[in-house]
Amino acid sequence: MADINLRKARSIIRKTLEKGSEMELKPLSVVVLDAGGHVIAFEREDGASPGRFAIAQGKAYGAVMLGMAGKAQMARAEQQAYFMDAMNGLFGGQVVPVPGGLLVRDKKGAIIGAVGVTGDTSDNDAEAGLAGIAGAGLEGEA
Amino acid sequence: MADINLRKARSIIRKTLEKGSEMELKPLSVVVLDAGGHVIAFEREDGASPGRFAIAQGKAYGAVMLGMAGKAQMARAEQQAYFMDAMNGLFGGQVVPVPGGLLVRDKKGAIIGAVGVTGDTSDNDAEAGLAGIAGAGLEGEA
Amino acid sequence: MADINLRKARSIIRKTLEKGSEMELKPLSVVVLDAGGHVIAFEREDGASPGRFAIAQGKAYGAVMLGMAGKAQMARAEQQAYFMDAMNGLFGGQVVPVPGGLLVRDKKGAIIGAVGVTGDTSDNDAEAGLAGIAGAGLEGEA
Amino acid sequence: MADINLRKARSIIRKTLEKGSEMELKPLSVVVLDAGGHVIAFEREDGASPGRFAIAQGKAYGAVMLGMAGKAQMARAEQQAYFMDAMNGLFGGQVVPVPGGLLVRDKKGAIIGAVGVTGDTSDNDAEAGLAGIAGAGLEGEA
Image (cartoon, rainbow over all chains, first blue to last red; front, side, top):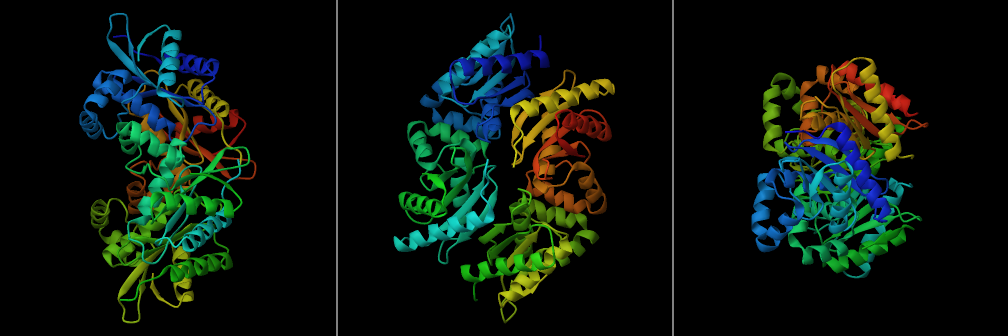
């Protein structure tokens, strides 16, 4: 399994922020986690609210722990809110079931990490994150 | 970015309590947080229930962490309850998504802190808090 | 049992800060709790570090929960560190066994609340707090 | 009070990693927090163990919450272990009282944030962090 190294993680963040700027989104915060859910890199743009690390990390952490990206998590939360509540309890409150939590896959489809984006609407967060992952030459799933 | 100093925080609390008294509200409790969500000052009026610090702080803390005042949080909770549940998990249960959590902004619109008011109805709490922030010469958002 | 009302709590805080200023201490933070360990009032002076609410509250909360002021707690911690660790576990980490956690007693010696002071050395914190309690016409124990 | 913006935070991290490389240290992880203890940016070098975010953040978070850098925290822990245990309880386990937690000050000496460095010996971590803060044109305290 190829890992996301620091160089790749920086590239994902930089490309996500560039996309956010191009889309004229509010200040974004972006985290990149490895396949074990541990933080490789994070950046919060000036003007973002102070709690953005926790939100970005929760979006990405839930994605990698459940093997399910934000859109699929949201669909599940809308059908079975108590299930996502239970996941939240299991993972210490670090699951945020909305778009903006993205899985990163290698060529064979194996999950090698996750990206969490927060700051604008959930859909815009996800769009910027997908562009960031693609910009780093990897395949993302929103 | 101008901070809220202790003198301003005292003024916000005193003016909020005066407004509550003028509106004949139940005993109020008022907290003032800085831009990082840390307590500058708090007062609980005689006759208020003992848990009021936590409620006031949760209203204000959620506002500053999310960059979203109580009314916007309540709207989001009504649309997507599981999202506000997730925020609560992330921030250790310290998010209370109802009116009475108010953002304080400087002249340029930057968030410089938050005020949490609790004791009467959420809408009355918010009205008293807005008056308190204005009375201290600052701009509030309910 | 006479309670500490908000007027008395304000007076304790104001007198403690005046004493600190007179002793030329670093910026102080002062909390007043009721006999159930719940916050009545708190103030943090400009320039104090952001974590001071938690420290002041922990000093006072441990004092009221254990019925033992900061100096007695410190003596116990020095003899039996594991005992104070256990108390910390029981009370959710909110016990700080050093001077600056003061009990407030009524005329008959009953505990009616506690004061937590932090910002300078523990001994100076305690001295300022004792002066503040006395200045409000109550009897303190450091 | 001047804040640390994202550009400055990136610069602190890049310069700290360069210094670590120059000193031939093991892979480092570096976090930059704002004056309220909230994450602005973080990077973990390839080969570092997965728990490094928590360690870096604990070093920096304790420094900013207590207004005391790692070396002063370590001295206090050596004199009064139960005091630093109590601080850990208060701040949810996020206090790591060893060198590598550095305060960042503005021209007037006010604390504007903190840096946490981990990966090599605590003293080497601190030395790399001081170089990183200086390299970004700010004043650090180890």
